[in-house]
Image (cartoon, rainbow, N blue to C red; front, top):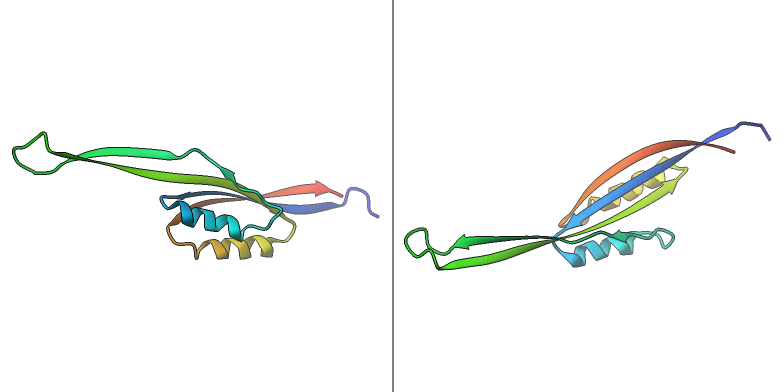
Length: 108
C-alpha cells in the first residue's frame, strides 16, 4: 500500500421545498435506505384580499400557503451515482431543489 494515497469523495447537499406534502414525501421513496432526510420547519404565508375592488372594505378573503421543506446529504466516491440521482430529481413535479456539490480529499 502506498502511504499518503488520496481518494476523492463527492458530497451532494440537497434542500427541497414544495407546497404539496405528498410530492415531497415521494422524494423520500427515491432515496436509498442508507440516506435519511431531515424535515425542516414549515413556512406559512398568510395574506388577505379584498373581495370587491370598490366600496365594501369589510368583505375580505383570507388565504394561506404552506411550504414544506426537507434536507438530505449524499456521499459517494463515484460522481456518476450523484449525477444519476440529480437526474431523477428533475422528474418530481411541484418540488423545487437547491443542490450543492462539494469535493473532499481523504487519505487512505
